[in-house]
Image 1 (tube, one colour):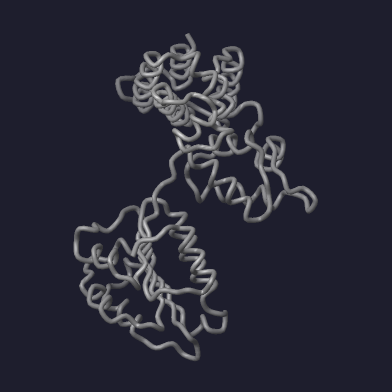
Image 2 (tube, helix red, strand yellow; image 1 turned 180 degrees about the vertical axis):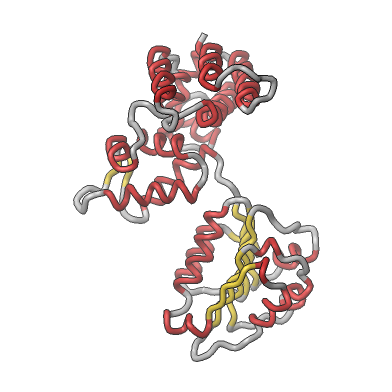
Length: 337
């Protein structure tokens, strides 16, 4: 049966275990998070010595894995077998047979990264339909879902974060969740015992992202036509290339204008209507109110097309001479005028 990340972790924490977990998909963070939790929490340290096995798909085969799974635990309720890099396994026949007679005392975990099983084929179909097998698909989070991820991740430790700080972190670090979590963990560690709120100043102090000159401030300046501020940020980027660039700015500009195009044709254009239409928090929806008046549907469509064009030019397509810095200036001039 298929499940979600939150419900799967909830069951694990309640010690409601299944005999097999097949974790697959493009987002490694969720796969690692689930498998790490099983590896560290199902068995005690003493039980792990005799009853926990971690193997890599490139170093074994499915028959060997199933042979391990069929063993009985020693002085423990369960044994755990974790298969990392399961995408390297070629023949799945032994697993298909095992699904018919699974060991109730074994917790077998497959970590299949950078791809998924074809659910139309036998193994994928069996895992999807089997009531005692857990199939989890780890999808990449869309850019507009990253702020909610950051807020929720911090909330579990009783830490709040203001809206601007969330956006600065997301647009500066990007959608690599493993890196994003690593930076957020630095923030958590850097907070004092009496301070449980993160601000842009906190972000700048602890992880070094300038609170005034970053991708979020650039996107905000451009989409609200603050021309002087946008040019200030570009100049800062030229002197501090780690702070931002054409490549790091374009995905967020593209997301913004793609959303803006949808809003132009939405039935309600107030804050709550936009939030409901896009499935985003109200505080994010507010950022679209003024740009709706500043950019017509036609201009918005032209900007989306230009963003695609300049993304390719920044990668060297039809461009042999113009630097990325000059491309960014040219792109922003088109958007702002």
